[in-house]
Amino acid sequence: MGDTRYADNYRNIDFRAHPEKYKIGRGEQGVLIAEPYKSEILPHWKFRTPDIAQISAEKIYQLFSDYKNQHDFVGMDMARKFLQMGFTRARRYANHASGTKYDANRAVLAQDSSWDTSPKAESARIFYDYYQKAKNNPTY
Image: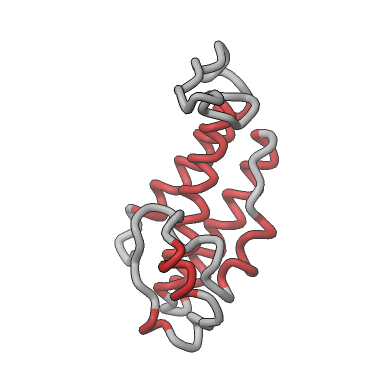
């Protein structure tokens, strides 16, 4: 998501009206700029606690299914990306409660001792399960 050319190419495009302009990017690329999907999905994207993550992942997966029923591949891909991003961001906070992975010298900080048992680790597992379900959907 650091490539500004990618972001510049996506600004001001309505991908529902012009799905042919959508390029499948690597990982979560474009997730926070591709409209109208960003505005439809982002308000539901939360992972602060496992209960909140469960509600969020279920809602985003429901959007994925709705897009699938509408034969909207771009929407499906964006929902899948938000599920993936829920996993990766929750995992980052499980590994490093501050959300900071690097110190001032850009060296990787040690993982928190509760990296696999914290509420954020459970939130990550919830999102991961829904992400896998979307990614492995035969229609997708």
